[in-house]
Structure formats: C-alpha cells, structure tokens
Image (cartoon, rainbow, N blue to C red):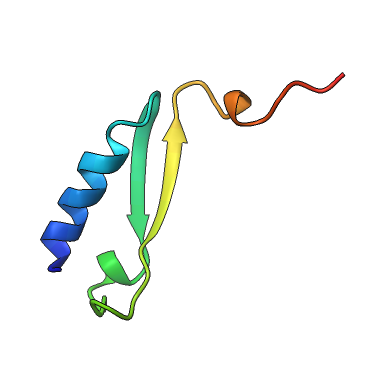
Length: 59
C-alpha cells in the first residue's frame, strides 16, 4: 500500500471515532523514510472530552 492510501485508510477508519479532535502522524511516515511492509505507523490522537470513557469509575 502506498503512503497516500495508508493515510486515507487511517482517515476513514479513525474518523469514525466519537470525539476525535485531531490525529497527529509522526515518525518515519512523515519523515520520508517509511518502508511499506516494514515500518510501523506512529500516531497520537486527541479527543474532545478526554479519556474518561475508557476506564470505569473507581469507588
């Protein structure tokens, strides 16, 4: 898969996440030395309402 196709796939799949504000790509994918089939994809996501819904309330 070409880099453009990979970015489009990420956009389509992760764009459905409720409350997703931003998705920041970094590492080899944006640095220009990404190797398809070998390199991983590094990303950081920012959610509108934080991550409270990921963990149950304590107490």
